[in-house]
Image 1 (cartoon, rainbow, N blue to C red):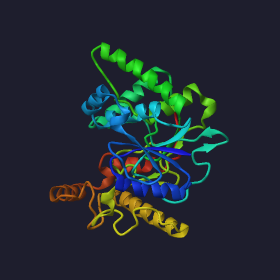
Image 2: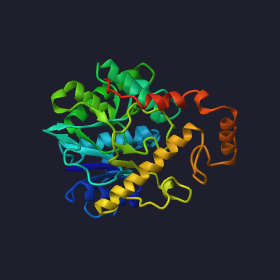
Image 3: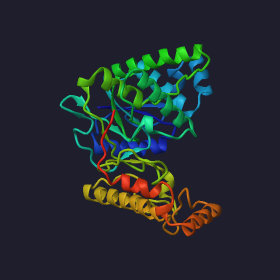
Image 4: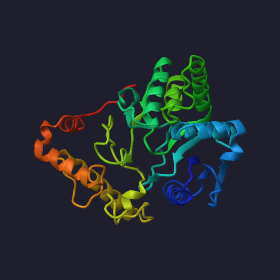
Length: 333
């Protein structure tokens, strides 16, 4: 099995690769798109400066974070030693224990995991939010489903389907540029090929499934989840969670090699995350925990004021969202 990472953090990547090898197979074929040699054993480095032409390097430098990453992945998949089926991943997608053999493929058909519907994404504060909008509109124009596959766990891809999807995006992007509204690489590299593949090549895919990722979002209530994880097999790794005052302070940053210890560690991480989720229903954060609502004195004061002003049941959104998430959820194309 081949896995392709994009990383400029060799220290974080080293732990993640070792964890995935332990969880899946020591024989993983690992490719890394990277600005410089990683120095990691058993890893094939795809150096950005060698991968891109001079003009492409200028384009990558001018692009924002999300667009640059999408561009690098697309060109690496077209030009690198990439298998017909591969896992696409990031250096912070860490397994919480052993991964079942059929997690990504069953009976020859791909299994993939979603966290939201692109059409229901309501934010427009970051470049990531913009890619969600662009990807939804492009997929809708092509009559494709529009689920969000950026679920912060490795996803299996088909190289030919990837190229088909990005060729279609390239034509649309070129047309918008001619009309005076260039989109460039502002598209979700997870959701575009996997929705395209399910529309154009349905026999190669199983129906989408809810994600299995802890810490997506990083903290509860940062945004509304369309699909609740049925279990946790991966962690969206944040180093700050393990620092003093962090959510996972005192816990191992990667799954222990002993299966029992790995299961206990995963359980405790999930317990802490969901304990925070439930305490925030009452606008409370455990003492000493650093969160988006408590990392500064003004924010702590604001949270206390909200709590004193009214009960959470009358505070718009939180109570309703909590009830909604107790309902059985369906996947909708």
